[in-house]
Image (cartoon, rainbow, N blue to C red; front, side):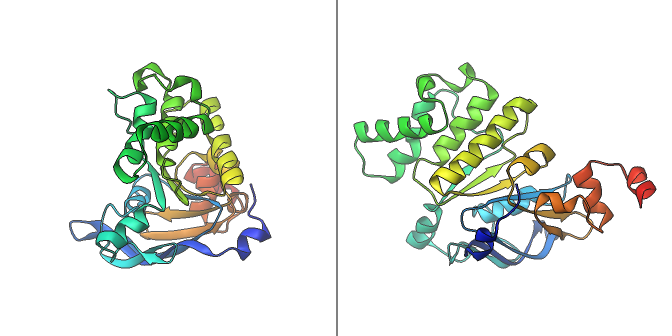
Length: 263
């Protein structure tokens, strides 16, 4: 999926400026900067240990950075506190790797949780909204099932429905295709595209699944462990012919020896 000129005209809904991050004073990422445009499907890709999950945690406000700023729709989530921070968090929805559903609750009850916590809606209204979200992801008939009674792909869909409960402008998904077979992962990609198009939601997705990257991403950034930063940015199809062997190797799934032989 190639980014259109319309995306280039849209403003940035997520902006990262000079982000440095790591653990125990050791930087994994060093002063990276990038933007996510409103309404696009944006993916953060790269090999193991490159910092994808670290970026994800900072984008959704789970960890404070060593340095830098993260703006969500113009507001800095790094420095915001109290009510201002809650206002920012209401603009985002998060699906964690594996779905992170509560096993003892039905899918409907899982989706109800954010509504119970953050809205003044009564019980009947909460049920209506939660059912609507599950229907949007194709799970209306499974409202009364607990997670163990549905497939892995359906659990991921339910987690997306819960992330959508408060009508966020941005959905952050962490490795949504992990653990899924190729057909189920492809169905999830199609769902992301449908939601992005029909609801205008911006998606920021961390993944290493090449099929999903080509199928759903308007634009990607590729992180590299060696440089502790971004080594490529743009449409996925353009990355196959990158002058950087690290980038070509990732997007063609070639080993180092094959890349060197083709240079």
